[in-house]
Amino acid sequence: MAGLHTSLRPQPPSSAANHHSFTAKLLLLLTLLPLTLAVFAFLLQWRGGGVDDPISRWSPDESHKFPGMDSSPLATVGHSASHSSDCSTLLGHSTASLPYFRDWKFKFDADLKPKICITTSTSASLEQILPWMFYHKVIGVSTFFLFVEGKAASPSVSKVLESIPGVKVVYRTKELEEQQAKSRIWNETWLSSFFYKPCNYELFVKQSLNMEMAIVMAREAGMEWILHLDTDELIHPAGAREYSLRQLLLDVPRNVDMVVFPNYESSVERDDIKDPFTEVSMFKKNYDHLTKDTYFGMYKESTRGNPNYFLTYGNGKSIARVQDHLRPNGAHRWHNYMKTPNEIKLEEAAVLHYTYAKFSDLTSRRDRCGCKPTKEDVKRCFMLEFDRAAFIIASTATEEEMLNWYREHVVWTDKTINLKLSRKGILTRIYAPMTIIQGLRESGVFRTIIASAQESLSKDKFLASIESSNSSVKAADAAGSTVLHRSRKIGRDRESQSTARKVLETTTQPHIFLEEAVPPLSPPGMDGGLTIES
Image (cartoon, rainbow, N blue to C red; front, side, top):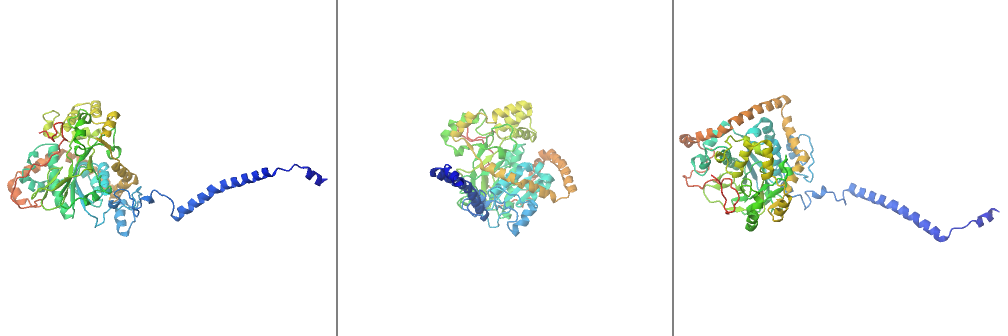
């Protein structure tokens, strides 16, 4: 009976059985395939091969590197025994990781060529100086001669600056003033038209005197190139085979004495910029990098009712080969006592000038100058027309009026005009500096440098230095307007000059006629000329 019941059960067709088997196998395959791939990927990563890691892709051993990697001064701590002690001095025990900045060193190799130095005269804070300095370290600058006063000369700031390899801090002391008053400059006429005037004229003279001393320091340090740059300016080494000032200068012929970088001017798009180096990417190109038709054809749209195409200067900055008889020729150029220098102007590289990039720049410029806010008096203080207008507004208007004026004359809010000028090539986007500086900031480099400098002092001593810096800054500000006057007074003492002028003298040749120093100049106006108002 049991066999009968079994025989009477309906049997499934053979095709249905095959379909059921195929489905089970398919499900098993779909389950095992992703697991197999996952295990395979894990094994590849574990063995160090086959994975396209974005960090390892930028290894210095690879042929494709982040621009400027060869010349960068930054490195992870512990790269070698010789460098680890230097890094630990600067970074303490931190092992800051720089994204895409692997194996960069804080100190340059002794055989790195060419050796480039930057000199500046600054009263800025660490928030501005450190990003400015380390950006230029990244693109190949090894040495900095910082002539400091104001905030930059305070103990809390100068202690940090002095802890950084390759940085020489020079304070504006009475001894420095007396030494500079005996320099060769005071016996010559090329800078004399800028003497005995306040504000920007006084700064221009001070910068030139500092540059003269920096030449001596550069020669003693074995530097090959020297550049004068303000702390609101960044070199943009476009046109080089890598994003590197070092590489750019390697390609300069040996018979060239000086290289001119035309300047681009920041074009801010907001009125609340706090950190221009990482918030500004739009710049107005220099006349030298535009066609004549484009420049004058779009001149009205480019100036937007301002006195000139640029808000401030437009004649760029130059870098000079360190050699015999070199001298400054104002803050924007270099010259030579014994010959007419062979000078070239770069077609792609530029100086990025972050001028009036913050609304607070209006009042900070006003606070540094004691001139009367009248059209006649400001001519004694400022060389360029926009500086004069900005000073008058900052001295006479309310906060709201100043902000409205700033938005109208400085901030680029009209996207239609921006797009039109961008298509014509007048406005351009440049992201490399902000990317580098933001990477440095996120790595913790600036924080660790400050922390290391602070740790070198006891807590009580550091607090005492902060307290004393406040009084010294106030005293420096109060005496700032009379310091250079004291130098000029000493400079008028011919007998003192003839007996004590030694350190800064570069030649004993008799006095010869020298062309006047190159001042900051506005770009060409509609008449096509570079002009400066007197």
